[in-house]
Length: 379
Image 1 (cartoon, rainbow, N blue to C red):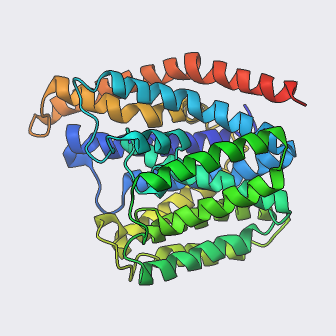
Image 2: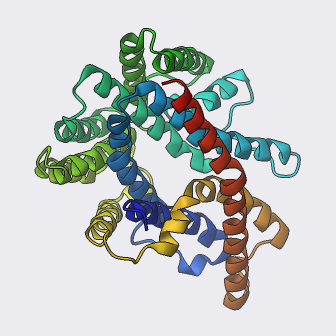
């Protein structure tokens, strides 16, 4: 079993938690927990894993262009496939109202930065990709300018910024509109060309990193939340630094306290799951899950979870549109007998797993291989 199987297992746990968060209210509502948020728990596990592994991937390569080719061929093929599926079935299942019906929506989707541009994504779960993309851009900038090893202080900085932002900013000061999306589109793809080709790479890294940070604070829907997410991701990186004896562990604890406090007095904190008890419980469970998997990583206990982790990206992006189709066909199951709900829930999970394996096998794997080939060929 791969030495990184525990990370795949964590991705599998995160994906299953998000699927459950979306499925249970529509299929088996009596099983949905409210003492913590299943979906946010899964997302936080995902973010910790990304923070732990992504900077290491870039540093191991030592090649910014190769790193970005890998990211593009890892993320975009399935992402575009799911968007095409949603568009093709919009005659039956209309795209949600939060998605703008103009060209700025195309620009926002092209960069994956929808949520930090204050606009809706074609699929609900795609909001997390915006923060993943901001993280990749910031990690690239830090690597290019040579300060990428200061993960602990950076994590604390984002945690502190989340607290301050929660106190001072009710929402992003820049109203959403077409021009931020098109400006981000132009900068993103021009910068990406520079990062991959090597021309003006340092300038591109500075501009893209600064632009991503500006969008996070000035244009995202809830600035404190975006800053807290970045704090969590850099805390994952700080854990990796500590494990490699490149930094202390205490910044992770400080960051966790700051993230826990971030929504406590936030002006915009109307979600039920950011109430102190629920929010802190969710954070603790995500951190404990990561720590337990890390402690048990040498054991042969992760095979099925690791398989779920391999298909987790497909599982994450596909399940929400498939759930909408499924509920449309079955009708409202919320008042059905529990046995019927359990049967339908099992059927849905089986269908989603099968569909996710197919897209992993026939979309993700071939495109990742092509990306590796192109990255190798350019060196």
